[in-house]
Length: 135
Ligand code: SF4
Image (tube, rainbow, N blue to C red; front, side, top):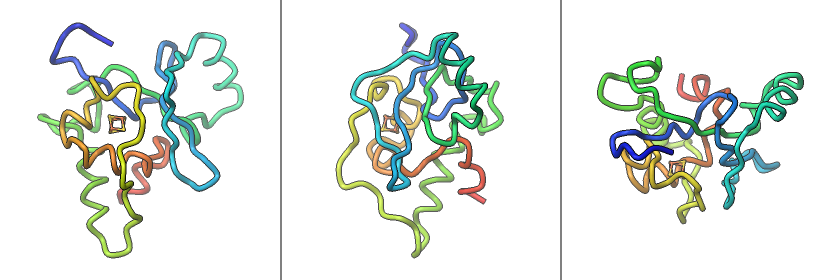
C-alpha cells in the first residue's frame, strides 16, 4: 500500500473509498479472509452506505493512521492487544490452528506488532463490534 517501510495497513478499518476488502463474516460467525483483494470504489461505497452496517459483515483495510486513530496507544494498535488479552479468558473462543490467507500480511499493523498470534485471532474480529467484544 506504500513504499514507506514504516507505513502499515490497518486490518480493521472503516468502509471508505479506496479501502481494501480483505474478508467477510461467514455463517459460522468468523471472518473468512479473501485470497484476492478487492478495492472499494465509489460505487461500492455508495451502495454499501445506503445499505448500512458494512463493517458488521465485511473487513476493510486501509492505511494505519497511528496517532490519528483513537485506538493508537502512542506506540502501537490497542485493538489487537485487547483481542489477545481477551483470548486469555477460560471461556474465550479458540484461535485458528493455521494462518489464514491474507492479502495484506506484508504491511499489516497487527502482524507487524504481534506476528502469527494476531493472524490466528484475526478471524474473531468484527470491526463494527470490536469495542463491545473487548469490554
Ligand atoms: S492479523 Fe494477520 S490475518 Fe489478520 S489482517 Fe493482519 S496479517 Fe492478515
